[in-house]
Image (tube, rainbow, N blue to C red; front, side, top):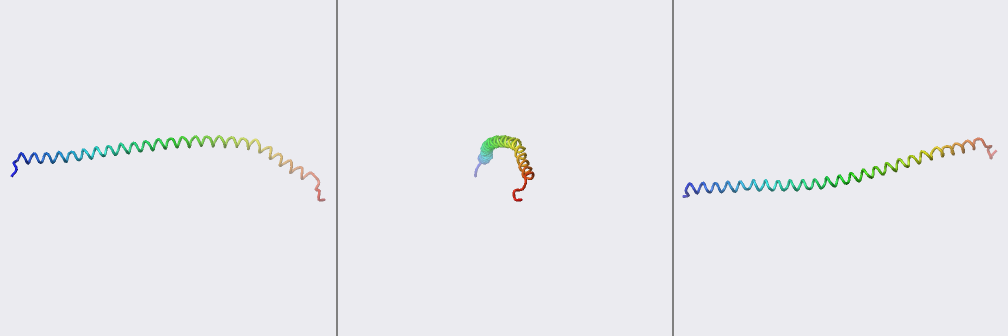
Length: 98
């Protein structure tokens, strides 16, 4: 039959080994959290780069749109004048079919 001191030593060893399990579980949890943080930071960087490229593309498109709008605005009145003049000249000229 084991003595009391052996009983105490066995229970202490058992509690020490069970205490190391939560420690190792905690360490593994911390490692997993750090890995996940690194993955999230990489994703954030990639998303920020993608956003910056999209914003630059948007600025380019806005510039092109404004440029085309200016060209259209300056050309459209001239085109309308020509259409009006052609229309007016047709109505003022005698009809050739008569």
